[in-house]
Image (tube, rainbow, N blue to C red; front, top):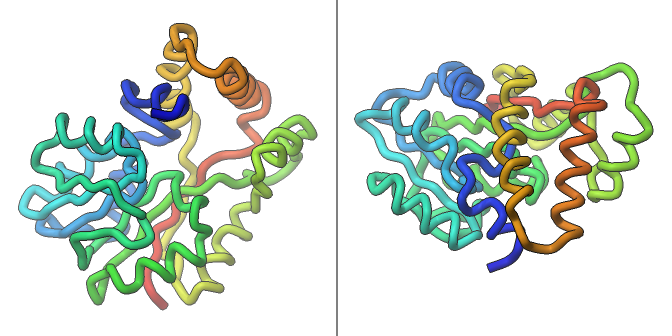
Length: 229
């Protein structure tokens, strides 16, 4: 098991997010109680309770490439169909909604939307969150940090432009906000204090949390709900 998987395996959440913002996306997508939903890049399963609650007569499929995460999902949520699988080619469709919290960057927005077309029901929706600048000043420290992580962050307009260039229509968008970051970083920071893995990995996450405290107002996750144009 890799150090990063070991770090996150016992945690509730492997990225920023919260149930309130997810419910907003589900409502905007018009998710029916009998819908079939995919959690693409589910991590340790933080979003699964809200997804299951939204589709009491439907079903939820969860995929991730990290086997320990899927093992935990299966143990915690026996009614969820959980698979170690590539989120670009998930089993179990067609889906009425594909949800991806902070994981779409692995594929790129255009590539992800193109891949998911064949896994969606005819009137299906995709909802995802991705990191971008909020507008205004871009602090040098934040620019340098995300560049070192290999990320060239767009602004909100640029993010939506990627959706429309892929041939999709933005139904609505909003910021995740402070609560979604705090729900992720507070448990992670406590976990880092007891974790005995790679010191460079630990230092990197401490630096990321410190960056958010200093400059988190300059960037955020943007939630986007979209449909085929």
